[in-house]
Each structure stands twice: as structure tokens, then as C-alpha cells.
Length: 146
Image 1: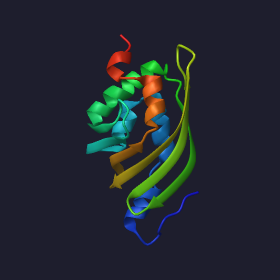
Image 2 (image 1 turned 180 degrees about the vertical axis):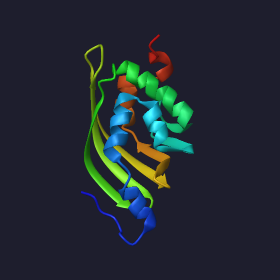
Image 3 (image 1 turned 90 degrees about the vertical axis):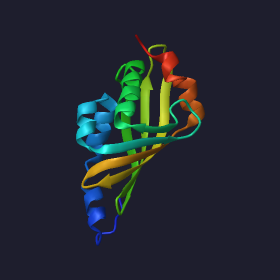
């Protein structure tokens, strides 16, 4: 379901953002494609108590994304379940699934709010299932693949 206020310029800009393309780039850990969708000052904030919680610059986010891509062997698949657009914000619920090398299946419902400026993301706020993320990924420092 997509809803937006048509009388707002920001809403139009948010509604024109290619969400599927962004998720596809995220699933591939394609930092070049993701950089093209982000402002220079983009911040990624993960809410929760897992090792991934906190605020990160695009560069820091990219480092974590590279580790997650290695752990998931780049087989992370996302599927959009719901989208709501209002003003400069896009609230997105999507599922993510990957089979890890040890056979563990990572199957999470993701919820993010994308904040857009001039058609690009300047802030991502992700709500994580902290226990699930911690149990599958643990500390990124401990799980980094050499």
C-alpha cells in the first residue's frame, strides 16, 4: 500500500524515489549504486541493542554492509511488504532472507524510515530485531571474514 499527499513537493520527490532499485542495490551490497542514492551527509541509524545499533556515516555503513555481504555470501533477498509515503519520509516494511554458510537461515522483517532531500536519502532509520540480529551476526568484529 502506498499513500502520499499530492499537494506536497517533498511527497512527490519521495514518491518518485526508486525503492526497489535501492533495495536491490542493498541486497547486492553495491555501495556505488547506494552512494548514488545518498546525500554526502547521509546518516544510517539502527535502533536496538544489537551490535549493529547506533549512528553511522555512509562510509561506516558501507564497511558493515561489506561484512554482512560476506557473511550472507551475497544471497540476501529482500521483498517489499508495505510502503507509506508522507512529506519527505518513506516508511518501508520488507522481508529479508539469506542462508548463511553454516546453514543458519537469516529471516527478518525489516522496518526503515527513509528521509529524502532532493530525491536522495539523507537519513535511514532502521528498527532491528535486536535478538535475531545478535544471534545470527553477533559482533561484526568477531564475525569478519578474512
